[in-house]
Length: 355
Ligand SMILES: NC(=O)c1ccc[n+]([C@@H]2O[C@H](COP(=O)([O-])OP(=O)(O)OC[C@H]3O[C@@H](n4cnc5c(N)ncnc54)[C@H](O)[C@@H]3O)[C@@H](O)[C@H]2O)c1
Image (cartoon, rainbow, N blue to C red; front, side, top):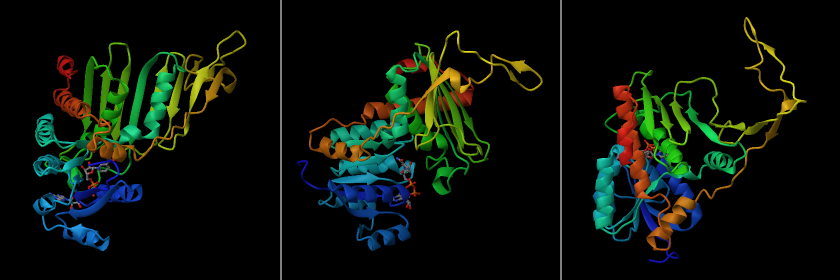
């Protein structure tokens, strides 16, 4: 297969995310979506109306010799069985995140892909998010001096989405839904293993899955990273805060509103005190404009189709997969340890050595 050949891709599970893939791939011109299979007849009908073939079963889809690859966009509990079946059928695979419900499941998927010589690419698309890339650029640029803390927050106000995301069996809950992205970003940014991890799941909404969580990763060099996901918070929290010895940066949202704030020191800088409740403070007073320099957040422009282009290039042997399966496995293991930490209410240390 060469890069010039248009890949024929069929989709398992034709819901919200599959439709997103369909639109992106249709515009890109390196792949053509040919058919789908969805257990919901309404989604089968929607596919037919869009000019796609609706296969009568997953087995029929996988048996089609015309198909080069499959895209798995079902609820999370179907990722493993479909990925293993697709590999056995000789199809390359794009699998939605979270790749699997456990490391053991993912090991079965990667073994099947290896045995059958097919590419298995997990759609960890948020490695190309521009807020994440801007955070990385700021942290690595040195503008803030030594970075000692990073906060990565995603806080929604609309509860857990309906349907399968509320059930344990289907792999619901916010750790598997959003945690997998945010933890993946942190482990892509910081390659060293953390020295400790502490996580608390939130279940305030009363489902059998978590409706959010708060996790803290500490590193030997003094960096601490807080990752927090909430679905019941009605004030807007910043997406990222980056704390350095010489300044602080805030990225408010996915549109990259925010600023880098650097203090100015010198004899001419006078820090005024403020009234604070029933008292007065200089220590906790915000700095006036005259004693800080404000800089803009960088505005990177990542290629939002890089994942698909890399998938096609990996199939033709021209590039290594950008989302390595080792990195996917590591994040799944970290999520298992977050769950363990939350269940035991304990800081995890020794298990991190095997990451
Ligand atoms: N990477 C991202 O940014 C991102 C964003 C959203 C969702 N996702 C992932 O995409 C996947 C799908 O999420 P969604 O939001 O599209 O869910 P969805 O509920 O909108 O769609 C899932 C579809 O799968 C179908 N389905 C259920 N069981 C099936 C089976 N056994 N075989 C075939 N079809 C089946 C459902 O009928 C539904 O149409 C999940 O794994 C989710 O985590 C990823």
